[in-house]
Image (cartoon, rainbow, N blue to C red; front, side, top):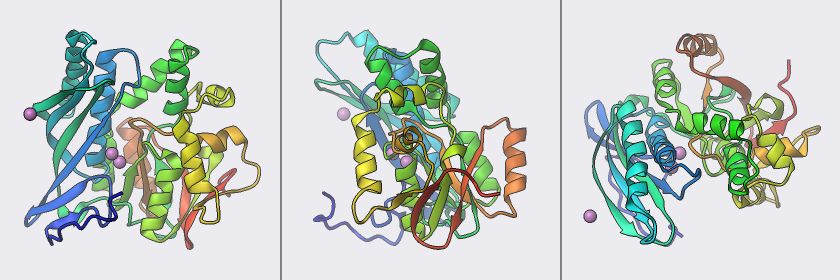
Length: 325
Ligand code: CO
Ligand code: CO
Ligand code: CO
């Protein structure tokens, strides 16, 4: 729906709608650029404080995905007239605490009345213009990594249906509130150039973005992809959100399919690759000779990391059962 619109051209807009990355980047001065993003969505869990924390971590993530450091934010919220305001206060408190953890100041915001609650943040950050992480920088020969497991869509859908086990929800929440801050810093300091965060399009959808914008072929090993405990169970029971099927239809079906299914991939794994993720991890590529040092740095920082594939010549995403070798 943006296609009919004519946007301004400004040479200082380093990353904008033309390239559509995780956040916009605007050059302020030599050596410093502004990163700007906005994200908000309806509740994914019952507890208002946790919902606020998840929404904030998710909004901040788009700055981290660009290699930036967020420092300022504004609340954006919608709230029904018939819901108690102390619940909204709890949502804001969850967002505030998460922003504080990230070293980000929340300077205000705006709330409107709406039938369905919604909450998120407008986030401003800074980035070194020479070290911006984009979706367009993956190169053949590089290795592909992910920093959080997938499966939050299946688990939150099961939660809404009242069938999710408490420990599965707890695990999913732990991942959703986790900041991508340390991971992002490690990527920038190790010379990574290609990165995005995994959210609503699912792992396969976001991998497609990287493949198409970089003009490369990503090979993902389905069995190497980390999945939150319980997600497979709920996916097998058909508890995937509507977005999972829409993502699969868009990215993997029809003559223009970008994501191709290899042999021997169980249907439940295949389906989970398209499961919309809330506040997911960073998906990035790194040159093979830099990978050992990066893996070592993640271990030392106690940051989770999974190698899930590699980059090759060609275009699109090939999902295979296992990594060769
Ligand atoms: Co993003
Ligand atoms: Co976003
Ligand atoms: Co206002």
